[in-house]
Image (cartoon, rainbow, N blue to C red; front, side, top):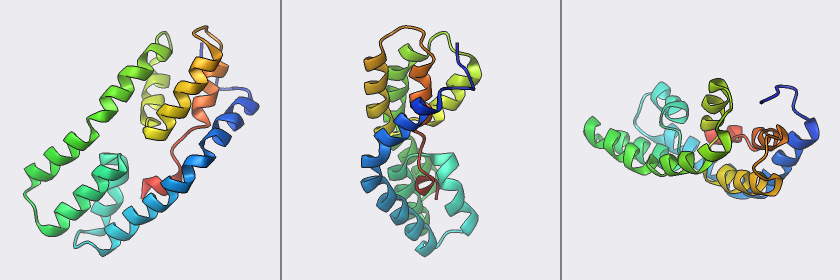
Length: 150
């Protein structure tokens, strides 16, 4: 069972585990923002790359291709190919999310990025396969930093 009243120390532990990853994520988020600002694409399109395209590498590729005037089908295909790794991440995490409510799986799936999978798997493996809700609280603390949502 998932509790919205997760132990704050578990959430904080998840957030602390992500701190070392920020050294790479923050500059990457800034690069995406600068690329979107300098590209010849509408501002709204640049902003929408975060929630719609999701992965930073796919965002950079999409912004670059849109700015260069690439065909929309090529842009979409490229973003999908770059993001295909997220399917593998989801498959890996699914075993830990079995039996959780649909809203948890939907929210947790949005948290999947390279570092959160690595740190999340470590947390799940340390706490075992039981039904301890603390396992999920640590993943919430590993949320994507705002810098990646450019």
